[in-house]
Image 1 (cartoon, rainbow, N blue to C red):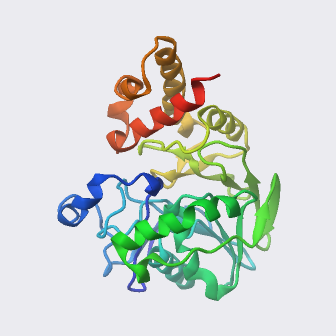
Image 2 (cartoon, rainbow, N blue to C red):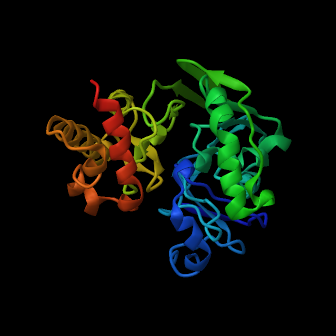
Length: 327
């Protein structure tokens, strides 16, 4: 089912690979009025949420890059309601995006927001955290997240401010509860299993298994329909994904794409893409193809299967080439 919640008047957005914003930024102001016809959640409209499982609500992000119009509402974000409290899973791409999500929580339940889970370092998933500081929750992150934020967050913030402005961007919030291995969060009769992963999509990936709902909140270890974005290790990502497939979940929520897919069947396209990237990058290296030329050769059969392929695939090839050329 879907529910509608009145917005707070500010919305924000971020890019899972904002560090790689390109010359297209210069065109965003001219393009944003005509290139996002699917953006139904303008500032006057309610936030749309899917109830993926009882008490588990998710907002689908847009298959777009950051722009002033979409305000970085591009990641899937949401919350889980237990009997004694709420856990937010990814607070959104900016202060404004986070404010809208917080308004959705408050409209749904009077229970306190006890946890805000930050799935990894990419700004479309964490910059909304400042909207929840008034609730004094535990901000939960990977043990490596503080270092990743120290290295990148201010750069991300400046890039977001350039597009959205200071007020809508928000500030950087550091995690207050760090996860190594696996921890449990009890929301009152509803236990969430939080797992810190080894190097994969990024160096700070967290996933959550909602045992009662048999639902995996995979964040960016799972992409569906929107092209994956590699910022860690290709081989590591394949390994982490294989481990996730063995979890006792019937559905999964990807970081980008539909708010719910069957599990593990929903990983099939991502597995194919990552496998193709691995195999063809190795073949290109073996043939002596340069990294510059490999971008135009590797994985081109995947183009028709993914949104934003041209924007991100080349970067994935470059990242994979650097990882594999000395193996």
